[in-house]
Length: 217
Image 1: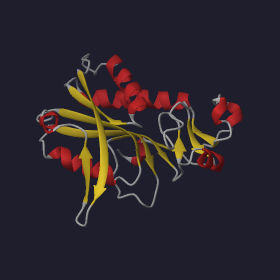
Image 2: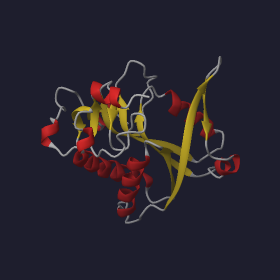
Image 3: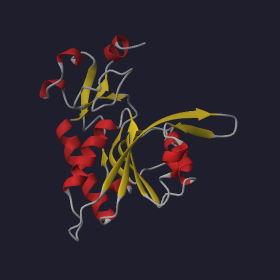
Image 4: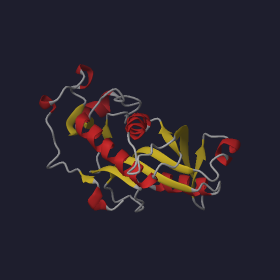
């Protein structure tokens, strides 16, 4: 996706006070600010769904959720896609898949372990795949995953990520669909976690030093 097509989030202009929104009582000292309110997230997901449907033109799509952080974005995106039709009036037939991905590194390259079986991966052959991810950080894991999936000869593979982090550690990978580009800060909420906490927070927030200490392991 062209960077002009996504929403560029900065701390200067997107730094909402906690007093302006509802935050669960148990997190009121654990986040420093709200970066993206829940309502803005939902509106942006509707736009991403519209872009996906318009480019798909009604052909069957296998939507793959990257667990765990991607599950909320995945659920909301799929719900939006199901309600839309193409310019020709066709809806998009969907099938759903869930993947856990673990990256590893050896002396030669970065690779991934994928939770699906060999037979499940072979079933991707000739199909249109949409991978749904919560956040792209360095991009290394996603590139390795795409390289692995290509060996099973899907017809097409596209990636939709709610967030892409603006970091010097990035390898330059940019997904096909991006919701927001965010600063290089540790964010939580909307299923993004810190040691399995904050998944129950609706807004995307910047974790505070108090929150890091409180939930450290």
